[in-house]
Amino acid sequence: MKKVLLLFLIISSLISSCSEEDLDPVQACNTNNALVELPWLAELIEAQEQSEIGKKYSYISKGIYQGETIFSLQNCCPFCNSIYLVINCEGETLGYLGSGGIEPSSITDWEVIWKSSENTCVTED
Image 1: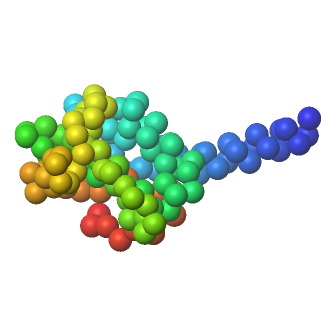
Image 2 (image 1 turned 135 degrees about the horizontal axis):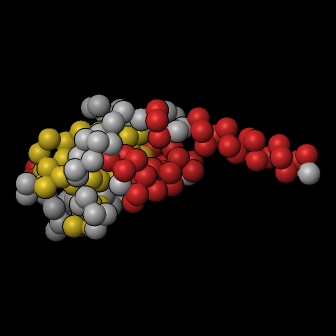
Image 3 (image 1 turned 45 degrees about the vertical axis):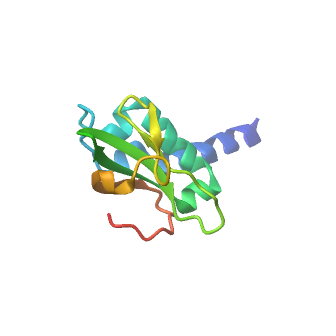
């Protein structure tokens, strides 16, 4: 029983060390803080925090595409072959960035809105 309790305390402290309150508020999609008020975005962040690759290389950007706020999970992973999805405020995939998809130049006001404290990417935040 003591081992289970200890394991629970360790996991709880890890989760709380990256609490949503530590994130800067991102006003988007009719929210005061999209990072916590959009359930799909909060789940995406949590999944990245739980992944070694996500924690080290992933980040989330926000921009404007055709007059609407969009998000994209991106990374600087040197050994990953990645496709960057473009997602709207409802969590629906609009397409992907790049050749044959959504041209990155058609998205304005790009800004990095989340990356782990362990992230190694050099981004313009």
